[in-house]
Length: 581
Image 1 (cartoon, rainbow, N blue to C red):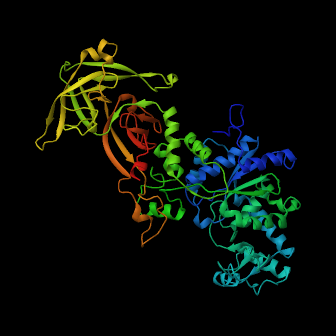
Image 2: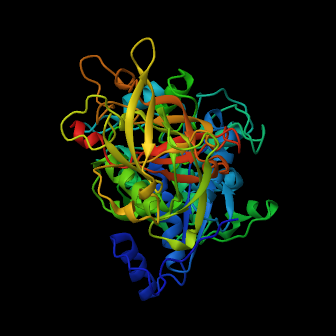
Image 3: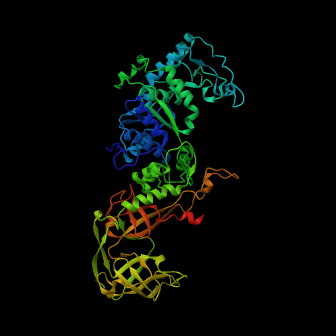
């Protein structure tokens, strides 16, 4: 398994964002002897790029300060959750290079939450309410008008305990009653207007079966889950800032640390009886243009078959971008460049793509491939001619070694590298012109052979024997250099050319009756048959390369096999979208 790697090594820069400064201050003051964080996703969908920032922050802060981080699955809404998502979440976290100190589920604490709710009832801080959902909304008021007390707000503690226990016993129908906190119906913070703590749901749970016909609400379970685990710093995105007063209310009024008897249900599950008073700290979400990251919209893309599943390489899910060829180090570089702030903003996706380019440029081996092939015949070589040329796997990293590439009389080159009538400034191949074949010498095009429709299907060329590597004429100046593969030795490959899924920067903007569906990019996926050098065809799934002059590509995680290669384009060599703008 992967593990958390501390970042505060002598060679690593000290990070000074406001969250890390809070942690430093808390450690220096003695408030905490050690740091404990958690990553608490709800398993109701696949994680996306935005979650990568939270994962890197939750696990990264813990590692940097010698602490620990739990993975806690917030499985309090079983109607929307699926074990498939649980498996994918664990896979994503480990793929990013992190390992949790402990794997927990909110359902591990259902017994604790229930005892905590009874304590709130006994203390006069919670009551059972019979208002239905519509009536609750009506009583709550709005941002300019205070709410009204529920007619059931003054029930006695004994009556509330009786009703809550009958809710627990499954006596009432879904929606018939809720347990609500008794806080302040006139509060300017709508979250404090007697929020629901428990609702009735007769739904089978993947971990607890039919044991519980009532389930805790997110705010209640999240706050107490952090307290149960002894979390010191609960890192959340900014939408939870308005929920922080309720978070603190739940932690303080239940006071698990001061009421250890509430933790007894943990013993039956083999969990330690640890508790604390966590501090919630909010940071900005990660939002990029040209993407949608709403789970509802991503689900619609999948169910309406507008994409090829949750792991479609065009999707912003971590499963999707992994299949696209994104690397954990590229995502960590992106998170570092974006930084941590309290200001939400829509970031340019060029930041994400740029991080991938920079990471792959430094680490990806080079290979030669042709994705729009045009045949070249070197007429002055014998029909059976072939040799092996030696190429470095990376121009700046000798540690990656060298490889042999077969060279023969017949080659494939990119069709765009030839123009019968060259436009101004064209520096590649044309009839009567010279071009350098990468690492093989200089050739001249003598004739373009066409089919019956007038399309060029073959170039008949001459290789200058004095220009071969090591020969006297090898340094003769020509205007252009092109890549190639040997037609005799190259392996046919399915090449999937992926691009941005949407054509506009803000597909979430619904104007003039249009929705994000209307902005889908019809050219976001194009499949061609190309040819790759043998060393590329032998790649293992998820092995990434720079195909010289073409871009960065990765062997597909599922469909690729040595001998029958399938490559996905991860990103182009340069940002072509900025030129479109």
